[in-house]
Image (cartoon, rainbow, N blue to C red):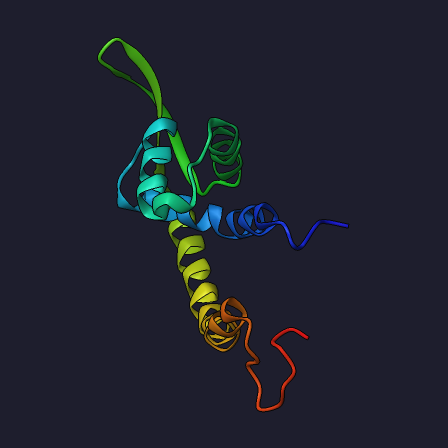
Length: 134
C-alpha cells in the first residue's frame, strides 16, 4: 500500500488527477509545443509543480491520440517543433473537466477549512476532545 503520510504521494496523486485538465487549459490559451506547455504549467502551478519532459510528452501523445489536441510540425528558427492546439473535442473535454472540478472543489474546500487549521495546530476540530482525524 502507498505511504499516505508521504507528502510526495499526495503531490503525485493531485497532479495525476488535475494534470490533463491543466494541459487542456494551457492549450486553450494558445497553441504550443512541449517545452512551452511545461513553462505555462509551471506558471499556473507556481512552486507546487514543475512538469518534467517525462510527464509532458507522454501526456501530449495521449491527448493527441484521443483527438483532444492536433499537432503539426513547424520550424521555429533553426528548430523543428511539434506545435499543438486544442480541437473542438478538446474544448468540450475541458468544459466537462472544469464542470467536474467546480462540483468537487467546494467539498474539498470544506474539508480543508474544517480540518486543515486544526490539524496544523494539533487541536480538535469537533465539539468533543477528539483530535481531527482521530
